[in-house]
Amino acid sequence: MKIKAHIPNTLTLLNLFFGVMGIIQVLDGKIMHGAYFVLIAATFDFFDGFVARLLKVQSAIGKELDSLADVVSFGVLPGVILFSMAKSHSDQEWLPYLTLIVPMLSAYRLAKFNLDTRQSDRFLGLPTPANALFISTLPYLALQWPAFGQLITQPTSLVIIAWIFSILLIIELPLIALKFKNFGFGNNKFRYLLIVTGIVSFAWIQLAGIPLLILAYIALSILEQVSGSE
Image (cartoon, rainbow, N blue to C red; front, side):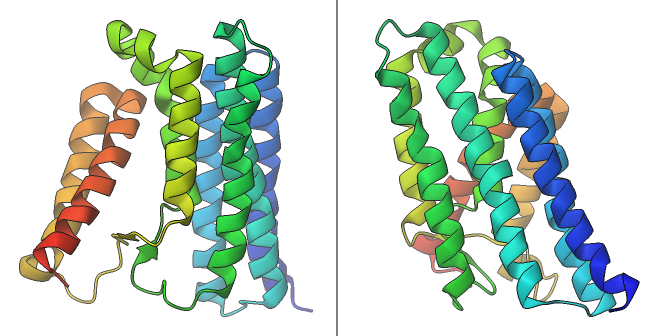
């Protein structure tokens, strides 16, 4: 087999590696570091598919390996982040375990995605990287706005967040994919609004802006559906 055929799978394995590294950091008490490892893993997750298409070396094993890596980086890692946050604030030992719905339904979504041929130009349900980015950057949002942070870091709040966003992973809610058939504003206004929102959010409060971006992503997707835009 040619060496170039191994390049995308190597990038996928690096996605997995940094997902595991993130889990280790969070279990060591460095919850804030989790977001950096999600971002690094997401970068490798993007480039493995991009490089596979560029080199024309897509393979069945690459597709399966990608999902296995994503379960760790975008399922287990955010689940461990929520669990650790809930455990550090909870007086009830059993409560934090309810946050582990995140890796369970992340795995289900990824398995379903591999078999679903309808998601070529639009996602059905929240993508696991978006969910992982939302969860992993919540500590930054809590630090940015302490009053709001006290609310969202309550164990019960974290369990509610875990369940709501886990359900968003698997429900068939059409969500925007940044895939342009053309660059006209009329057909892509919600995509452009999403891009502008992302730039403004990140420029304003850096990593703390990512949860706001993900919420805007869901809201803009619903508005797009309601407006009947293609």
